[in-house]
Image (cartoon, rainbow over all chains, first blue to last red; front, side, top):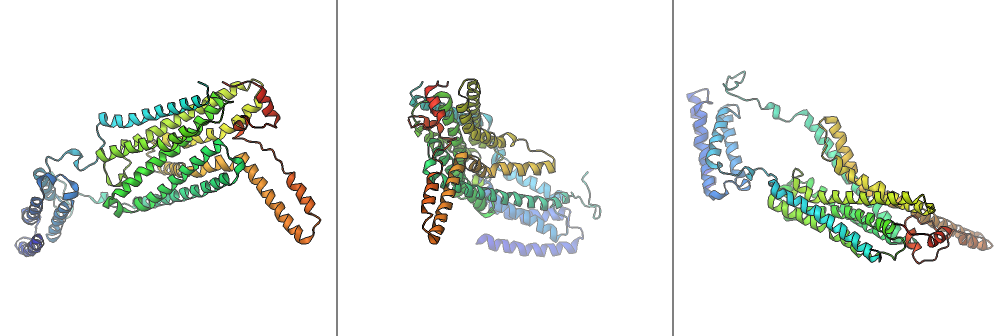
Length: 149
Length: 356
């Protein structure tokens, strides 16, 4: 609830700020844009991530909405400031966000990968060997039931 | 120095090439065609397999051990096709279910892998049965089928369970839909092993039959050869999909052709099995022809009864003249074991030598 009213408040301040900025300078895509996204988008992102347990920061299911909100926010600000999106400032912004929040996530955390070979190997070889053993067992038993060995 | 937008001279990168290209629509269309092809294939397979099962169950004269194995094989194919259709319609075509990721869809995937294993292990059972029959012991009693049931229905649980455990621990994607993982080989590996063993047994049978052809029992070799022929055609056809699976061509047109061929090989298997083991079976065809002539004469009799009564004697004799001996392709060997033999071939074999 608190975050919802906070978000509404943020939106209003943002709009007022943008209007003010447009009066100040025609080109909003320099440091003004950077300031805007840091002030509004990053602040909300920070609040949302603080609500999460720090151990959950690397979990994609828990952070996907928050991350999506941040991306949308930077897009809206760029629209309002008539910047092209994405741009270099947004790239650098996200690199900073990743350095701060996702730096110690494992490589496989967000992308599913096969386990290493020393684990994958047995999982494949053992069923094959069991198959061959079972086949040999069935052949041997059917031979025996014939009375010929 | 960053690339600059040509008009506003801002730092800018051109991402438009990553956007939705015209190729996508054609690709989407072909994916849908393949999807419907798969469903049609499995539906046809189920229909033909059910027809074959009714034929096998209703004609008591056909039943013998080999036909029992056929019945089990057909059952596993029917279940496999049913599960595939369910999983295609309910999971693959349904992104909401995939994103919700319920446990049910993983259970469905487990049973799907189990049924796939059952298919190929029942084919292996057919091969082992023929091998035991022809190469190992020709004149022995009827085999005990318990071990075949164990191999065909029980054993495939093991690769399916190993795959499920490994997938849960190491590659737990939504609904286990991804095929990009090597953990699938935990199921496909044993299947390929079963096919190779099967092929080895069948080639061994051919070797035995061909070498014995030089002896006097050419007729029996011929009989056995016909029994083996069906299985020998099927095993490579079922296996070829695993051989060409890794070799997807890069070229767009060749890639599409590859996809269509793979889909036909994978999804029309039940139809192929039913056709080769049942509809092309000489014994089944003979039984069906006899039944048809019986019906025709019965209808003829009814019509003649309406018209006159003198023809009852004609129809009675014509029914008794329907040939009573049957040329058993598949079940010949069982009939050699302790049953009355009226055929000259069987008499010759009884007095003759043993194989292997």
